[in-house]
Every structure is written in structure tokens, then in C-alpha cells.
Image: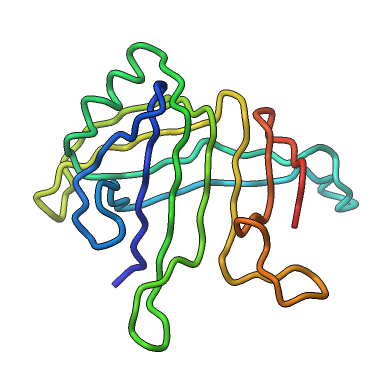
Length: 172
């Protein structure tokens, strides 16, 4: 079984877009069926030297059709900028409990694509959403990292803060 991931949106007015998850501690979130995001840095093929800055592709998620689907479709049709989207990923620890191990926080999010479809192996309707920050930042982190030289966790588990032009502002 794959590790579960959940998504929380905050709309343009600061209100949560409530999903259908009933999992304890994740109520109102959206269960993510799949997620992809690609990060590259241009390099010279011959020398291996860096030739540019990091390039992020939009984040692609797949989710079931639920009560958030028409709200996300409206966001696309009206060009609405959502305040945030937070994706939390979980895995099972040694004790058999699911714990958060990685998260991504996108601020000032545009949902830029919407592809309804029927999953070929299951009777699930899948919605593909493409999300990209219009301004603001993406924060990616893990709850298991520690600050160098201390036993203190990183603030909010931040690994990197990336601005709307996908420039890295801070790496922890």
C-alpha cells in the first residue's frame, strides 16, 4: 500500500475548502491519489556546470470527485488565486502509526488545469489539478530533519522557500 497524502486548500477569502476526508486528524482534507512535481537545474552537457537556476514544473495531483471539485473548477474559470494549498504526506512508523513525514505549502496558488476522467482500474472519478503559485512561495519540509549542530527541529520543518519565479530564497 502506498503512503497516504492529504491536501488542504484555503480559498481567496481565507476560508478552508472542505474536502471529504473523515480520517481522524485530517478531517475536511482532500485525499490525494497521486502527486507529481518535477525540479531540475540546467547544466552544461559537456562540463556539468550549472547554466541556470532551478526550474519547477507545476504540481499535478489526482483526487476523486468530491464536494471540492466544483469549487476548484470555479477557481480555474474565474482565475481565482487561492491563499494556500498544503499537502501533507504520511508513512507508518515502527509502532504501526501513521506520522507526517513530508509537507509542501504553496501560497497564492492558481489551479491552472482540470482534467476530469474515469480511472481505468477502479470506479473512481479522478480529477487532475495542476497547481502553481502565482506569487508567494512554495515551502517543502520534513518533520524528521534537525538544525545543524542542534537537536532542534527545523522551524516548521522547512527545507526550502521558493518564490513565485521559482528562485530559492532559503535552504535549511
